Amino acid sequence: MFPLPHMLIGAAVGQAAGSPGLGLALGVASHYLLDAIPHDDRREVGHNPHPAPLLSGRNLRAAGELGVGALLIGALLLRCPGAHTVAVAAAVLGALLPDLIDFPLMAWRRVQVVHPQALHARVGPRHALLGNLTQLVAAVVGLGWLALGLSCF
Image (cartoon, rainbow, N blue to C red; front, side):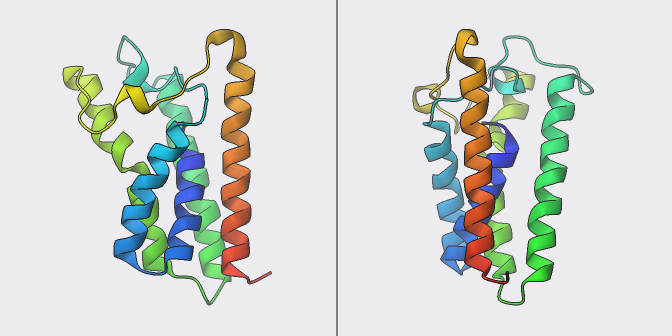
């Protein structure tokens, strides 16, 4: 999946966990669970047979999603006094960690260390809309779960 669903689900998991260590571990686990949901992420660097230039559309999209996710999560954490900020940050890091390790390795050496393809459920090009919809649903669920977990609304 692209970064935003991983970040939002990771943040919700971290808030529920309440501790940084558990948040980090559950964030990593959430990454693999989300990647098992059928989705369309063929445009990501690590899954493309040819590494993308640094300023390619797919890299800019990933950077944009990282920025949007950071702003959303940060705004919620600042608004809610009961936030487990360190646990949320650790879980978001854990949720992104497999991609942060393997995408540079794929672009540089064409290897993946922590991102087994067997755990990835991707849809084909004919079902790309559905594959993107699953990511949107995951992001909305993560945002809602985080907002409910923070209980500041």
